[in-house]
Length: 174
Image 1 (spheres, rainbow, N blue to C red):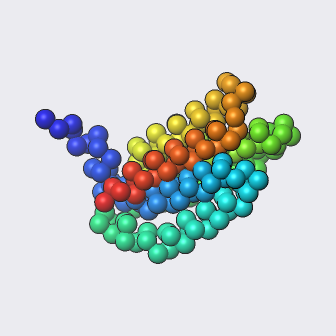
Image 2 (image 1 turned 135 degrees about the horizontal axis):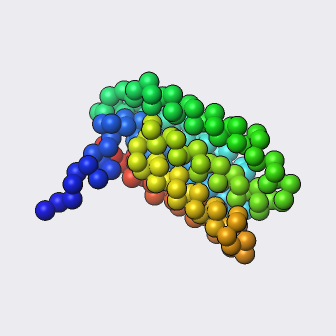
């Protein structure tokens, strides 16, 4: 017998109609992060390019990706924007502490902050977003606090691959 449909990501889409569009955004940003691991001297430029491409993709495709599932609730929209505001606050007040410790700490702290902001965003995008946030936090935590000998480039690539994987599953929840 097949597993309970409630545990399958495709069954979550009607409850989280923004998940496919959010997945598209995350997968594209993940590609930019992986590209930044391949070309570390262009990391910031590639990340900015990925954000621009992801935003343009949302303009063109978000409506079509969300259409089969209806509109998000007000609560979901509040959590989407609240999570982004939470991320901005963390970058403003927590990030400078790590910036003073050098590029490696700053990069890993930025990945950790992004992972943290996905935790409350799960209200808007569903359980996959919660798991994404946990995996991202664990990945950056491994290099930031547990194993300072781990390669920044490797952790950066892992972060991007995690975003591509989770984003793809969310996007394909059609």
